[in-house]
Image (tube, rainbow, N blue to C red; front, side):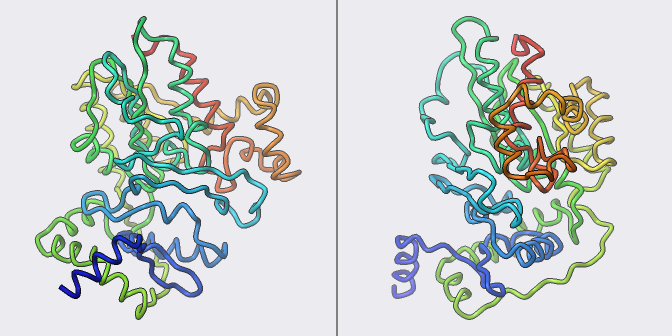
Length: 368
């Protein structure tokens, strides 16, 4: 009864487990990450001097490793790079009761509108809209652009299942667990950057370990808030050593197999898949392009597309351009990718997201 009381007290108090690491407090869910991935993150926060605020927006999940917390909201100001703190605009991260990212004006009843067509998005942080407000993310912008292209009387509803750090392995899980595709729904797929990330063990191995009998017991015990509270008091996370490894979270072979399976599943359910390449290494980009071509899935290679729009950006999005020009100064003239991307040269900024939505919607009545 005593321990039950403590567990209840911690739950009602809103206790959020963290693990001490040097002068930082790392969210406890990050223990679900592969040791090589976690070591890389430890190096990042030591170099940057902060734990990015959005890292606290997630909770552990036995099937996926982690997911966005439900009914959560935070405005993030320290992100991307310590060199530009206070210069880049803050962004808000908000979730609904199911842990899906939403806009401030979202209504739960929107998902039950009869006769709607749906834009499903399966991807990682780039499709999640990391670094920008939900309203500025390309999926939301695309829904707005396509609103006038559907048959009379129909609305378009957005279901964005993207989560930072997700791989094509998670994409297959999502199709099994959550994604309900109707005939002629549009489904955007965008995985690759995290698939190619160096790791000691694969995503598939971690999934099997968490879901074995011993793994389920261990995972459940580690979810007790009392255990996490005691660990916060007596345990400090060691600094993990970066090791060279040829292993990837998802191998090239499995990546191709995952994408092929995802595309086929979408088509079998009557959906229309499209692949978006944003932050994907050369080998994985080529495999994604081959998998898409084999099944006649439209493939958008946005790093190349962005370059062709460089001279037009100021005229197309003048206010957004001024915002980033003021943030980066003359550096933006040397690193022209900063016009479309954040300093990590991976995640699209508001200009990148807007341009992506404009280009995809330019195809016309893609829902009909």
